[in-house]
Image (tube, rainbow over all chains, first blue to last red; front, side, top):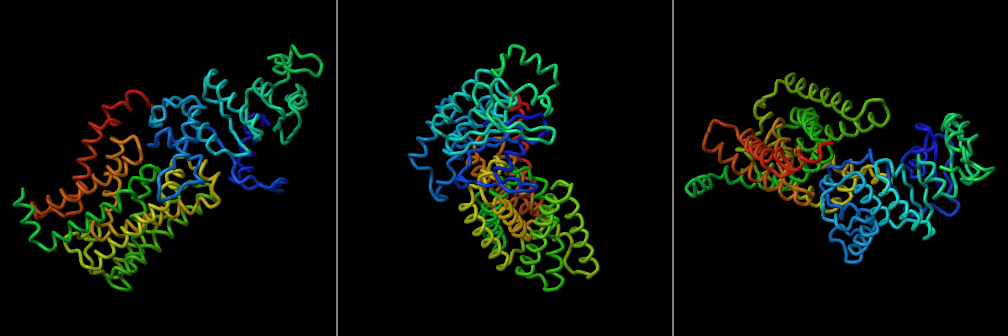
Length: 219
Length: 285
């Protein structure tokens, strides 16, 4: 599911409320299937201290924090899982590098491998592609596709509508004090996007110029 | 050199001083490392001032005993820490501004009471400590604090690393993240009190911060930083004590911190993450 909306419309607030980092202003959160024991989470990159002295390998291992024994090193299974997660993110060769040597894209891959290590049924990603190049974005999207094929629920805050249309089934559109939720095709229509302040009507008509009736945007 | 060592070891107060600072180094080094990594380097200095009223009130009401020092200091220090967190969470002031306001109030109260009570404790030993007159009680205090500190670190090291490296992620994963934050503040106050008696309020933080920042210039991993920080603070204590022994008029606190400062300057100049290292060349962000 994608969360879409203009800056300040409450996308990150929505994600943080789901996580329990903020309490809802009113109402409450219900988990019909029970709250997942663990929620995979990736915050916006701006909130991360890149100078912290730790290796890529150890950052990834943090995802498995629940299995840590305070008085022992990581066991062999965990260490192997770390290597597999780094391999999947395409940065196994950087495993022993300290964080400050990484580029923005490499750091985002390292943080993805931490989410992989969490092995959670519900995964929340807050603008995961804001600082990465196209090549990295494609790679990370393929990881998200893998999660979907493993029947994990992925909630992702995105600005790139074409990625939403290509990779997401449902969308939550926030803006102008309203929220609309439904399938991507129902929600991401020019009328709604304009009405909820995501784009101007001229932008919408340009973006959806090739659209056939009820079909997908040709972008 | 061996003559010097055997000469110093003839004096009981020098033997005590060496033992106490060795234990103190093991205890304050990890606290200092995390102070630096959590961007609380200046907050550590502020907390050192914040414990003043507790120490003074304890001293005025119960005399210069280790217990009054410990309890008064703990109440004042943790009071300021908790109030700071409360103000930062519920008002517009961020935690640095809240802490600055509260520690200044605390320091003023402390000095005010100390003067009003016509105290006999010399201000100089209050500010710079009295490492050459360490008694049994303060040796027990330092050893006790070191034991509690190292055992707590063994228990919370990984959560502490997580919450320091990526606090947003840590809060999203743990039900009560404040336990680690406040637990660390508790260790900070405890170690300030242990260092207070031997190094004084002005110098206590020096032995925490300088070895940790110096170690940061050499280490790419937190394990290396913790180990190196301990070695640096140990070196500072031993060389500093020797220095103040050779030059009898120099107080030990500033001598120790000066040696730590020299290590810091050398590290900044020659460390791989220092001025001439790869960090300044590649990642200026």
